[in-house]
Length: 197
Image (cartoon, rainbow, N blue to C red):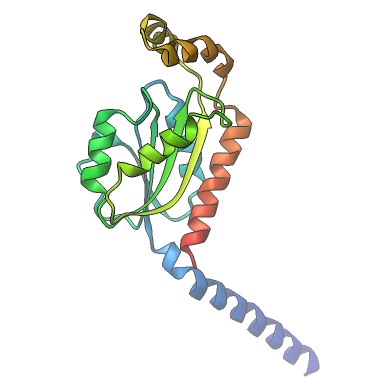
């Protein structure tokens, strides 16, 4: 009799724990999450796929060019590369036109190392592209390998800043590496965790 009561007690504890977990997480489990990205050379796509792979909830991944809007999603991971000191004009327009009242986590790739003095302005300018009503859940940024055609373009530029970037660009080879991919995955989990409370 004592053994049966003990088993029943253990079952109840297990049931209570499972029920508690479900009640705590049912909102996030029912959320629909979009990973949207623009990628010219594949760097941002790698980060997008890393973020997407960590999401256990109802999820979709798409290139920004294939999207008409951001309707129907509870959380949006939005990624793009820095091109000439900010997002491309197409990405800027998309962000401004479709981010109203949205919860958005930005992920940004760039040719500079993460400690670059230029980064703060680039990230702030990127955030300004979102509608004022949007909620920024977080921002991830990492270095990506600069393609040769981009280096060639910067070398020909008369802008001394772009010429400097061209000289520094070979140092970006092989990025984003596994360490940066791992950090992107951690970012993905952190955003989902933040939205589960």
